[in-house]
Image 1 (spheres, rainbow, N blue to C red):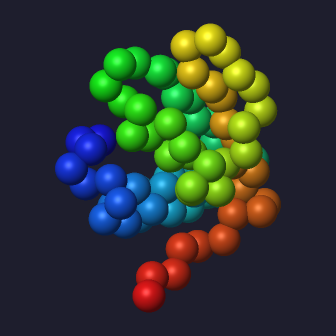
Image 2: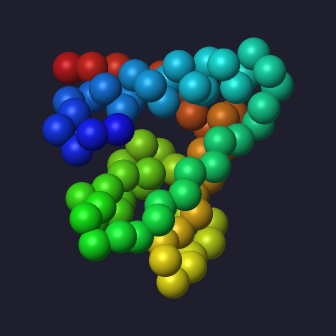
Length: 77
């Protein structure tokens, strides 16, 4: 996803769609992986802002988990 659209709630809509599809398939969690690069520091905390919990760290980034039983739909202002 382009950095130009981050923060405009598009990422929340995409995540909601992924959550709905995962639930239809009886998937209990979604994993997100942040890979650290020189240019993507903007998204370092992206997963935590979307409700993911960090479950591991690595030198090149980190791994986060979104448990679907705890995930609620996003509601806009």
